[in-house]
Length: 210
Image (cartoon, rainbow, N blue to C red; front, side):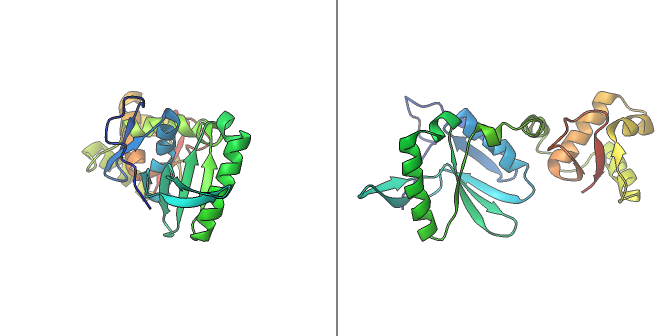
């Protein structure tokens, strides 16, 4: 087992820093694709924590002992864990990489762990990714302000009902921009919910209590 340290500067690599509210720390990434994956881990309700460049492990490939460091280690709400390797699709389908990754998966299974390969085909699904990036811009609220308290009280009065963003604009007689920014902050913090996997956030987005 060994660790890589992305916090040390490397002259030949661009290191991305993702600020994670969920982990209460910054996540260091080696590529823009890995950085985009962080948005999905950050706003996946089933993920309770995730770590980049976790402790690596040995694997046997073509008779040689090699060392491997996964891109991410994810812990889920049911306390199971999963490693992730992030690769561009063109790299993931290369013959040599596929052989190597089979050996890595075998070693992971022998250690009773799971490793999955994800590419931009899984990461860059829209509007899920753009919605996650939008929520991240409003991340980090410590407590609700008075207007957000009013929104939450209104939604909590009918917990089985959904209300559109546009209806809340009319109800509270506030500007669209003000309502949107407050709702996005509440969504980011998990106080309320909306289906942002399939639909872009807009006036018709349905909101309900988390």
